[in-house]
Structures are given as structure tokens and as C-alpha cells.
Length: 442
Image 1 (cartoon, rainbow, N blue to C red):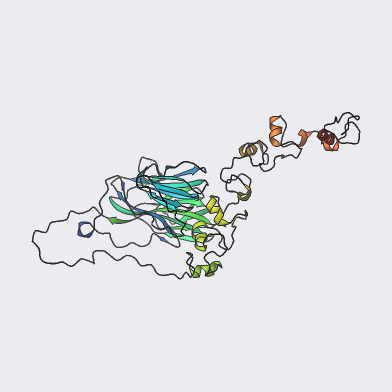
Image 2 (cartoon, rainbow, N blue to C red):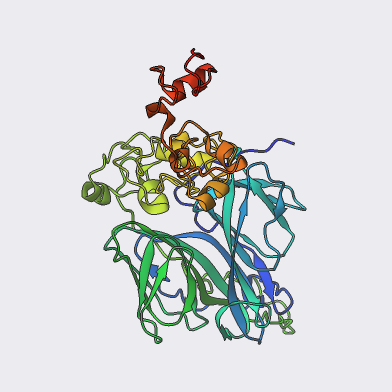
């Protein structure tokens, strides 16, 4: 089977368009007069440069529902796992890259960091790490109340509704406005940095990386910090389909040809054209503000377009190595490390010098102690001889001496000459002679 690998795209918008089931049977969405049409196009769910990274349409029943959030990390080479254990789940790649495959139809798609897909039926799709790296992902699900969730239950009411997963990277001082949805609260998940959520009836709230919450009302998300903040938002949108109606047979007989009712379907929204000379997803006006080259899609030459750097990854489009760890931002995205963190796995080694940059538990200094053991002991995981006494930390631990105290508090043999032969004890030990016998000399 030939599989076409999909390249990373700065605008992975509305990647899925299916009808799923929540608490009821699938409603057939018919065309023409046999189905009720959607109400007029609602206002945008968000104002700013947020992107829809996955979308679907779900039929809700009468009961209450809750948002649920889960996170999973897969090591390099891990076998494929179900992309979702429950129906109606957005799967968002946080770090690394993934191969998602449909179980029945077998098409495959590559998802990079910040990209997402939607799983309508649990077990219908698998996901696995790609490109030889590790994988970290979030699952955002809509569950019937009682199956676990985040925040208070809500009742959207019966009908087919559009649901979107938005993603945005807010630079320090930037804001994102999210419109009120009467169908249910917005689910907010912060994946990098921190934000303040304002406008909710419950009052303002601060969310740091890894935190999530549900919020009603027209919201304003503010990055009041000094580092970029990455946010995803699950939004329950407009009612796009009511219950399909039964077509009434025409008993009056033929009356001649009819003219199609072209007014029954409202025209789709129009998107104004924004000048973008180099097609990198960053408008010419934004390039002028950022100082990037409007005629070069990759101003700093790190294999990420300027638009990807600003809108998707939060990296610096003018610096090829945003976190100063000697790895270019594009390479970090490819290998699954964090281009905003010089030490992705927090093991004391920069990603550029770390053979296991996503594991954090290896023996990086070859002293027979793992990173976790060194962290518990207080020794330096990047230095095999923390106290500098000539014995590796692992040797000292295994022989009952203290790897944090040079010579265990005893006089330094390099400065002592016990037998007075003019040669230090350390030199005699190293040479194999007896430091307590003046006649035994190297």
C-alpha cells in the first residue's frame, strides 16, 4: 500500500467534516426541501488570528453533557494505540508528530505539533509516534454527564451543532476574544505559558500551562506574561440542522418544469483577501510589524514559515534557535522537542547535547546512576564525579561513600605525603605504590 505523507501546513482548517452521534441516532442530513436548513450564519466564534484546527458536526440529544480533558505521552517507537477511547473526541498533538490511521478505510495522515483531528466513534482511528520521536497529545471529549468531565454539566438541546477546536498563540500583551455560545461553555486548555480569562460570569481566572477549565459568556483571553502562550478552545457552535422533515408527496399531479429554489441556501461567508506576498500565512502588514521579510516565507531559515512561527508554534521568526539550545526550531519540531524550552525533558541537559531529549531518565554522564537516581541524591546528572575526588558518583554510592563530599571529609590525598618520600599519597595510589612506605616508590 502506498501512503502519501502529508506535509505540515500552517492552516490545517476544518480537517474533518462528519456527523457523529451524542446520546442519539445519527440524523441523515438531506438536501433540498427534505431537510430544515441552517439558520443564518452566526458571527465568528473568535476574533483575532486563531485558527480552526479541527471541526465536526454532532447531533445532541436531550440530556446534559460535560467536556473532558486527558493527556498521554508515547515514547519513540511505541505501537499504535486507539486515538480515542470515547466517542466525539478531538485529538491534539502537543509535542512530536503522529501518524493517525482510520481502522476501516486505512487512510493515514501525519499530524505535527499544534495540529488536530476529530474521532467520531471510539476505536475507529489509531495513533502512533512518527519520525522516530516521541509523542505527547491531548484528548478533548464531549461526554454525557456521569462519564467524567471538566466543569459544570450543560444542556445544549437537541439538534445537530457545529463544534470547532480553535488554536492560537498569544504573544505577550496580545488578547483573543471568544464569542458567547448559548449552547454550552467554551473549554479552554493552556498548552504553553499562561493566560488570564476575563468576561465569564464567574469572574476572571488565571490558567497556566497544563490547566483547563470551562467558561460561559463572551470571553477575552489575555497574555499578561513575558513569554508566548498557546491555547486551544473547544467551542459548541450554531445549530446547523434541525430534525429532518418528511417530504410530503405532491398529489396535484405534474404542473410542468420547476425552477430550482436557489434562495433556500444562504450564501457562504466571504473572506476578505489579506495581502501576503510570500504566502507564508503572515500578512504583509504583520510582517512589517514583526520585522520579517514579506518576500521570504522563512525569514530566519529554520525550515518553519514565518506564519507557522507566529501563529502555530510561538517561536521567533527572526531567530532560527528561539530557545538558544543550538538546535534550529524546524529541527526541534521534526524530532519532537520543544523549540521554546532548551531542556525539553528537564533532565539538566540541553536538547542539543541530550541523546534522550524526551525521556529524562537516562544515564547521561555514564556514572552508573540514572537521572532519577542523581536527582534524588542531589548529584549532578551531567558530571560523573560531582565532588571531584576522582571516584565516579556510582562507584561512591555502591561502595558506601558520599558522592557529594570530596574524600568523605578526609584530607585530600593529593596534598598529603604520609611516608615523607616527596610523592603525594594520590600519586602513589595512582601509580600502585604504597603511600605509607617511603621505600615503595612509583
